[in-house]
Length: 256
Image (cartoon, rainbow, N blue to C red):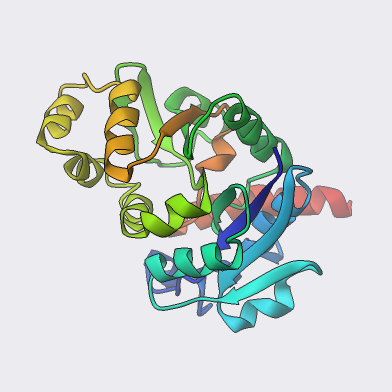
């Protein structure tokens, strides 16, 4: 299954990261001598299953992108950016939407996710990673977890979907991306019964998939990924410190 990729890179550096970086945009914040977005684009570009890559972000990113990667100028909101990227890839069979703040991502993690998606028939696929897998690789990384019947998970920073799903459900998709670190707000979107079940730790993956599919009007599935790199983003100073320590060490070893 060949797919196209959309990298969301329009977020201004107005959150917690502005305390430690003067960069105007989060995507250009340097880690290990490279801007955050470069790690993501390089990983996607090295993935055989990916055909075309579109980056939705400010014009300043043009000079940072490798040949063959198309820049679509970002708008004023996440919803607008998803719509712009989808329009640029409207003829794609499926689009892999990835945020630009996951510098640990690599080809194997992306390929594994796409392999698992190919085994199921759906319109939307969302990766989740277990707490055990995350803490085994990144024990110092603070993540937001949700405990379900099947275990305790954190959400990934990508989604695979058809252009129709992204276009027709753009507002709901934007809420899911925005609230992915706020389980209670996500549960409220699903309904009161889900808030109660989440509190009691009695909510199952099957129930989540069914309700999400009802809201979107399409078939959606959760994909359990063994790669925590999919969900380990950089959105606060401690994350940046961790990324600098890990990616800086990798960069140093390559130069040695």
